[in-house]
Length: 554
Image (tube, rainbow, N blue to C red; front, top):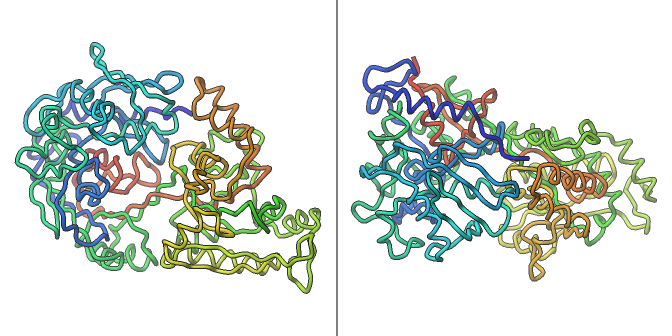
């Protein structure tokens, strides 16, 4: 499906420009203007960051790890990872893909200035992507730009392959000012700490940086108008426990974290505290090693799919921070529009009788209550998840208990360190693991993650850990990713869904959500369960959209 343009969100942007959100005593939008409201403290549990670097292209820079680079450097458009999965033009007034998603045409937004007062123009967009084209900037996101040029009032970007499954990666590319970056010798390493280098179009500009905290103040010339929040303070705590305490006491206002006992430890501390779970197309998924017993038998895999309680995963392991996935296609509710009619209402449930029927038809028996395979061997396997991953560690135990009680399968709980777990999943040295999916914003993410042999390189798997391989499925995956029409893509999607239902190569448990904790003491306008215009996670690109929508609480 084409990522939809969110007209309501686009309208918000236009409204901000037209009204200007008058400074001072407030306006009809409820904004009080820059400098009059309370600061927001955005927190992470990553410990002190000792090296100052604001470079938005470096994943380990302070700007990237704290997340403040996203309110300084803005993208062409915002792709919502939840809700309607829509696309909202941002630094671009319009974005339009060609039919096969190999070419993107954007109209630069007029009236935008860089924070040093220079005009933002099409040349800045061309320059940004030319850095990849020339090789000066490493293409870590595999954008594959082959051409970029200004064409009248638009900029046209051409790619070597379809970007349908990576639209967000392209549109979220931070746009940088040519007049500053043309003199940067190595954009891959420059920390942007020299005077005059940290220049963006975003709603906030740097005020103070230290290893304890970073402060940004509202950009007085922001193209979106005045902002209700005059200052952002970014603070990093030593661990999740310290972060939870800070959120509960009000020392921190906004974060993304999985908080155990979230009701007692956070929500009950203040009625203004909010915990927002934003479902995404991704899912916490049980991957099984299809190359060895017992998972080389699709009947056994199907029986597990009829036995594992996805709602228990949501309620107990994730403490409500997820959404159960029961549809046989493995697709979550945010992707229900892609589910073909044949499977719209074709769901698994906890049905032990059905699971036993599937096993008996395949030649399984029980010996003293223990499941025995057609070769006469007891069915036993291990589930591996790194120690300390508390939610998935809990799910390991739940699955072990469920399968023992219902089917007589002995499931061993394995909790190695991350290094051992990571090596095992790559090399195929495991029975079953719980893992996430590749994020593509559509159904392709699930199916490439579980059935695509492209992920197996030199014997090591980056996804498709079970090593599923079917030429017809591979062809459908390639067609889905590169189709020149929605109809062609839908036909390929039908092949993928049918293969997933018939083979059960993996078992999605629950939507892998983006989490957000924030309080409404001073501001309203946050995303909510009823209005997921963005995820509540302040490290996502949509943070700029949230900050333009916040208004003082009356």
